[in-house]
Image (tube, rainbow, N blue to C red; front, side, top):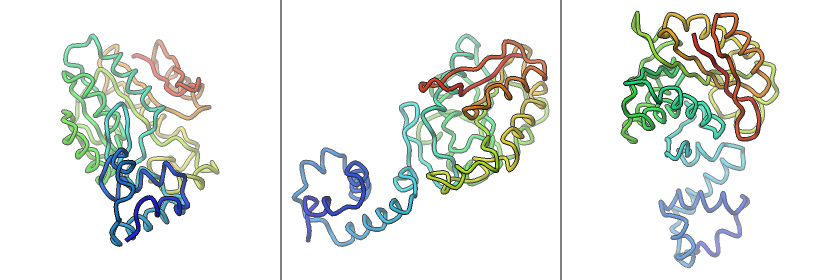
Length: 270
């Protein structure tokens, strides 16, 4: 049987990706690969690697191949049923945590939770928070529920389209959402990782602002007086999202930059 030392140079992937796939196949840490590169690898493991390598060469995201992605210092399971958590979304979580910092037992709503990364991260950062997360996709909710259970986060999940998932009269201190915001004509939908991610989590099938219009218009019925609504949005959508908030009567409307300096999160208070 061939050893890792013999097999790894033959990979068609970048070395760091090849190592990650071997770690996944063998279920070992990176240090083990380095210390045991002379260990014979079974034909079954070699075949498993080749299959993953082929999928990666076809463009499938590493997160789907490995089955997880790191976010806010936690490991979140992912599947093709959910959007892959991205570093820029951490800004939305950090903003929400700051907003609820001085509120006793704050009520927080995450609309369109996907993998649950936002809702679970907020709940872990503030264990006193009463966090509710909704999604129209039952498959996505199953992934989110699994992440909450594995990470020990107290989150209540509900299936439905935006506010329709909530019981009548339910109100919150903060509502957050990372809704589908890519316009249907955007060529990026046919490129890179986006080709493999669920379209329902990427685009509204319209101009990229449909979800914002719907969420903003219904927010007043689900926010306490002075409550806040914050979104993640596309790199050029801050002015449009802020205008929607202002037209709906939100005050202290602002946009916040991500680590790349791009205005990525916008919101305001009723």
